[in-house]
Amino acid sequence: MHDRHAFRFIASGSLLLALGVACWWFGADLPLHRLLRVSGGAVPDIVELTMLGGLAVMGPIALAAVAVLFWQRRKADALWLFLTIATGRLATEGLKLVLMRPRPPRLDWLEIVRSWSFPSSHSAGTMMTCLALALLFGRGPWPIVAALMAALVIGWSRVALAVHWPSDVLAGWGFGLLWLGLSLSLYTTLGAQPDPLRPIDDR
Image 1 (cartoon, rainbow, N blue to C red):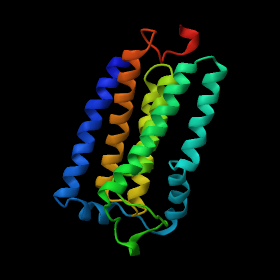
Image 2 (image 1 turned 180 degrees about the vertical axis):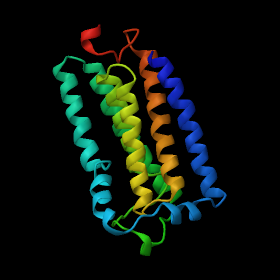
Image 3 (image 1 turned 60 degrees about the horizontal axis):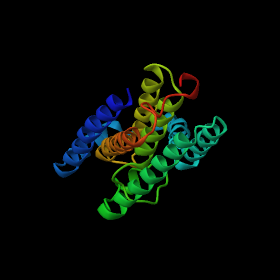
């Protein structure tokens, strides 16, 4: 089952990442930036919403999940989760430093930010973390659907607050999916169990 997930994540992540790069290179960002930026009374609620996708929230959630997995004696799963999220976060920030893309005009910002723009770390981090947790703890398709919806909402909030170009968010979603898919494919290939991410009570 996880082989199929890995293939889908890699394929869809590569497509979204390519779309993000294309939107940046071909100048499709500016009209979408103007269209999707919000204003008025909704801004404080969106600021609170977007905080849920930051490292200050996603990081502790991931660490708590690692602790639960250790408590369940799923040490390999715990290590996989920690390494996937930690390396994915570092890789996202590394891309920002390499590409050094400026954010949208500062006068448009509805939140204070201090890093480079491409790709969106909120979008990538939420995608990686929520999908990984859905695979580790979920049953059936609905946890994965919920994880994808969470990533979509967080990504939208970054554009709505005008702190990211739309292409940054597309690339963030894509990079998160791609990184998770590659990590999942590697772990499934190396795991001693035929389905190493299966919850412990199903083994």
